[in-house]
Image (cartoon, rainbow, N blue to C red; front, top):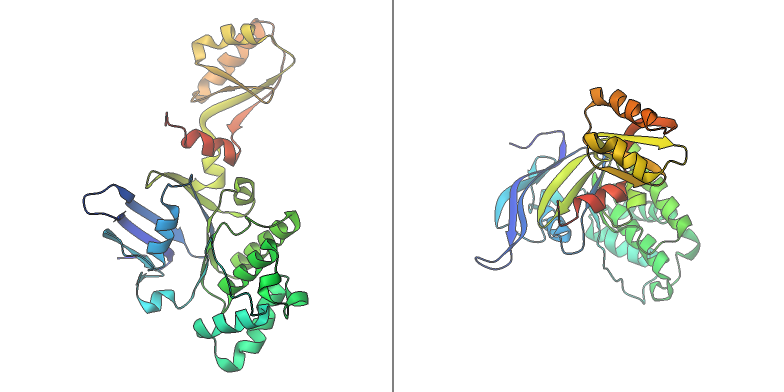
Length: 307
């Protein structure tokens, strides 16, 4: 039974596009709590878009189940308060921005009497009020991306799926998207983001899942996934790498990253021994701290063929 406080809840969700063929999605079990910003990360071809299509009810799973706010995906009621910005989209170039939003507001079931107010609220939210009467065919890629975001936000959806929401935006546009996403989260909206812009994900997401070859291989809060398990980073004066390697050989392989010495999977009670070994070797230590990755470093490590 799906949890009532889960915006998205899936269990053993699989998808194969051909009988006895390879699985595009394999045994996906995923929970996204209501009111959070969730990043879904993986390389091209991992199956992320297939996952979105199954959660939206646009393609049927081969097996398993999934629900949105406790309602099985694929049912009309599960889509009633869902917004979606696809990675690739195109609107009719002869319509202007307000007309485009009006058309999609009717599709979204926004009451006719409320559409005018809703269109103006949304077009202001995505920063297009000044070009609201301009034909969409004359829009830049960034303006079209803003319009697509506006379409996804019509009707105040409870759950919004964003597939590469900042891909065509300049730094100002990306900052605007971050502000919009944070405001939506503060209002209780759940945001599910597919993105390759890991610095953006790191700045706005509460939790992330790493997806590779059709399966989730790691997930958790941003703080948890970027923390190296048992790792320690040591900053020193200019020390000879060969001396450091010899001194730390009993403690495992030492990596040199951005002027720091990093040891992975080091038990906490061995940190004083590491410090003592370096000092005995004549190395002057400036700082010792638990190792954290950037989200990009963690992504590259998890997506490495060796993992």
